[in-house]
Length: 484
Image (cartoon, rainbow, N blue to C red):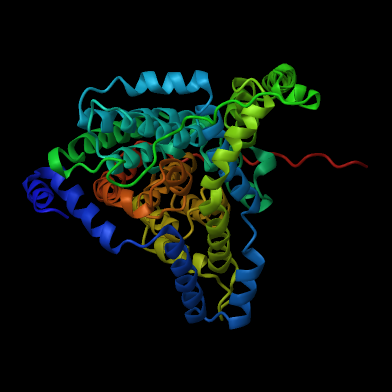
């Protein structure tokens, strides 16, 4: 670091100074996201052995669970790929470029990206992570505005680090609202909890609004200024998102490759499927479907690029950005399997021991705070969203019933706290890092600051707002009649 930069960093005040200190620390000491995943597997495996699991059980859990997130790995890779393809199409690139011209100062640019990222995340977290990253890149390309690219990237991640689980694509809320998706053991404890009892309660909406305002303010105040700013160019990031020049048809057999006919027909087919989904299924379940989102965005990218050849050129450029996801997600799947499947000498897993411990000390009014802390701690090691909820929910919700905590709010306690580990663990950061072409250490200094401030606020909110609820016994749906 140059002397001028050191003086400038030292002259920063308030949150900007704290963010700079954390950024310098993480740049020096924070490992690559893949190292974080490798170390996590080793730590969880050692903890399972200390819990009494045999080496064979730990090894079996590791190997058998290694590919448990295969579908999710593909989905996350497609989030990056479809986002790139759509955003680099001429119409969407122009829209993002217009939005990138809105902020007039470096600090407002950072807070602008954070606010839009969280707003979009309330609708769909997959869209948020690509939208935020591409908007950050577009702002960074401006020649009239010098903005810290690390802070822009961290702001783009705030949709995943603050409010994603409080929105329409909340995995836990979606699972609890769909009887067919709930395991029988959980259905017997909670019954079906529709959105009116979870994400659409005024307490949940108020929490979401508070976190959006708080996060935006922190992003604004912590954005580096002056010589402390490190631009994308200074970080060695290539910001060129220009698609390859369109090639020309050289032989008759390539006619369809350069024709918009097939893309338009695929667009009509997809539109027909989408209309059918809205007609036959609840509106919220359709707009919250990640698979549906990916299908629509993939075909939308094909239509917006007009010809199959242009579309394939965009895909080719996007594919390398998925490499980190493909090699890291299996490690998290293995970690989750060891934590939840390797039984110790007493026949219980590490996850069950943690749940029992936190639930036992969470009697009375402390239950909300204890469950939130438990979710944060476990989420650092198993950042799996809905999958982790399926593991936790049977005993967490049973404990909530025992202490007469409102079950819908218990789901939201999980959702509110679920986002916090994302500010530390780079699991869900990987698709954004691929878009930004940065490393986790470049962003964690800024996201860690958000975590430090968010944690006490979240604990206070779940405790205070939890007292406004009354306990409602679960309504268990009658089993479906069986054929005679």
